[in-house]
Amino acid sequence: QVQLVESGGGLVQSGGSLRLSCVASGATLGISYMGWYRQVPGKPRELVADVTSSDSTNYAESVKGRFIISRDNTQNTVFLQMNSLRPEDTAVYYCTVARNWGGIRYDYWGRGTQVTVSP
Image (cartoon, rainbow, N blue to C red; front, top):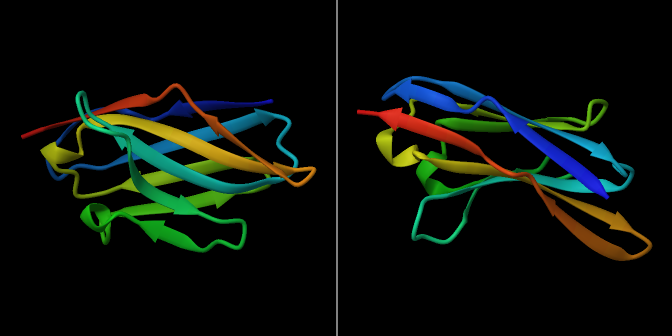
């Protein structure tokens, strides 16, 4: 099992910045994919950004040029630097990782951290 703990959420004014962190613990050997999703009430969870084990990154169009995802494999941590925040970025942000072990992929999710951007 892998446990994920997110931190760094909060309330910020439009145009401000926040940095989210997600630390993985437990059976972390074999973690390849790491990513951030977000969800607002009544809508499906959507991808914000992700990063592979080879540091290939992918971003939602709405956050390109404003958010940066990075990972520290030595600390089993993934970060999301969020700049130029907008009210529409308000959501619960979830960390997710995928672990490949014995030819099987296992996906894990954190409990989420609230990000609120005021106008």
